[in-house]
Image (cartoon, one colour):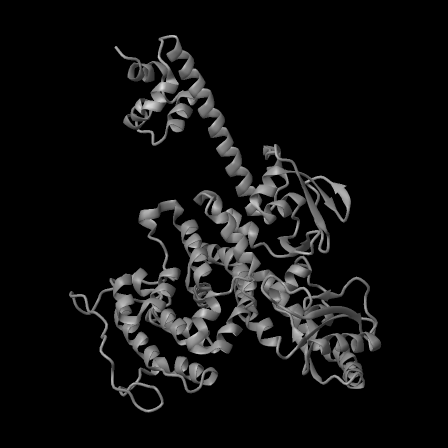
Length: 578
């Protein structure tokens, strides 16, 4: 968001945006001529959402342009080019009008004198909620906690409306596109944060069109040599692609027709960072099948995807154990497709993805596809109501208990790539990050199961809580009413939900033990002076002394006594009558 130079407003007085409705011409545009800079945004909006009213977009642009006037980006370009670019990215994806207006205004509250209250009065609650969700917390006020608490704020805002996250991702994408104007240190910092926190959000929302570009731009900033090597290797592999993919496609087409399935088969290049990671950075000798995959778009219903799979396997030898059915078991981001690994006619391994045309928008645009289908009036309900996103529920379950200094680490762990889908004995699917253990599974069910767990049955066999789970495992958590967490659990707990729950329980239990020890110490000392602590507590005298000493509760005073931060003679002087 903030990439600007010091600015001056054109006048010393604060100027509010116009609220009066402006005269408009046919076609939904205002009667006043539009700034040429707005033309690309309107062109994208008309191409994806023809016939919609453009007046609010034009008004939002005019307000943003006036408020940001005099501000410059590091590149020297007017600052308004940034919110314009963010809105244009979102328009090209088919986002609704309120999201585009919020994108145009998303830096006004943070970087100009415009207040959220004024924005709400001028553009309504819906736009104000979206802008507030992406507005950073004040670094001067929050200090070292600002970044963590800003991300916590975004997560909570996304729980109410996922469009907040979509705007944030488009904002970061444009900042990555213009990263070359930043200092080398800041380039690395922004690119690293993008890979660790923002790209995973794009993946969780299923917005592959953003994920791929953000991945590669951050990769180029963090590892220019690795990026160049991957680009060269992929280009060379794709140049050899027709000789590998051509014969395979030549077999697939007739096989599909023979099974009465219509569809389209095309070559889908992988993005550079995915290739780099898959090869561990060693891209020498990259084969075409590693640089691209075959995508089959089936015209019929979901069942035709399985028929197409059989057709492919009838002409290209499948590699055992490499079939993944994300139609029957969608990913956390609702992605649905079949993935299979086959051998090409020339002996090269190839990955083939099969999905219906109805699945394709969701596979490419994720949650945004819901907005495109809903249209302006239903967009807010459609996006805000997505409670079927398991990853978001998991984040919300632990975030409130995580202090600022641990929140970002927990967020990185929870958003780490790779997932494991395990099942309860009743068939409920539990999605966890790779490397998760039976203990993580227990905490994912509910905090009570986690705290009371003593072991697990994995596929019917007894296993320790530390056992690492695999996709398809059926897990039954074994519990005992008197069981409790151990500090040793932190050695193998992987998910933030489990780690925060364990840490919170241990801290609470330590505080309880410390309070009990302090109370016993005080009770013994008062008994020697013939004062009954229980009576002092019942009368409220003990609590009054605690409050007078600055403690909100008796337990806090007793814990302070146990730790030595409150001296016993000092407390006795307050409680023993003279």
